Length: 181
Image (cartoon, helix red, strand yellow):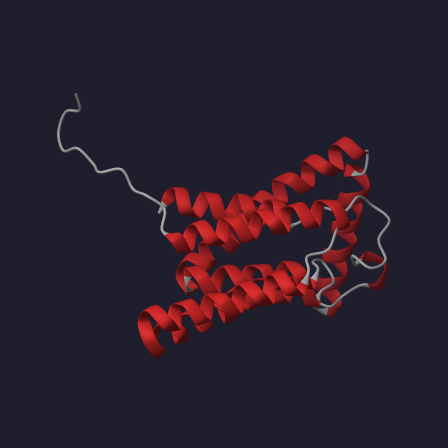
């Protein structure tokens, strides 16, 4: 028996279940191909806007669209600097279309933390950790002198190190956000 006030168990909404399903498909696809298909990300985003529009009218569709914009905006700077693929940006946008802008900011923050930890683990076990720190040092030195910009030798398209399927940290960030909510 619980002392004090008892809390009701919280159940996931259908929207949350859909997002988990979409992100799990993205994880599987990203792990096997290192790509996340546009059909999945844009399809999920469009479905989120449509469902919210159907259930809550124009305000629901507007909130879903705002979630998509916020999600894409959170990861877009990293993409522009060459540190992330466009599929990851679109995936966070799709999450935003279902969960709204506030929850999406939390997913982005927790995904960044999970991505950093997972990136360190992957670099450590692949023998790339010291080179990763050298690359980060060079990148930060260049940014200090020239300002943030992509460095051709240190972008995803040109690097030789291990690649992280970023849908995995996005999934971790999503689950942390839903758990803490």
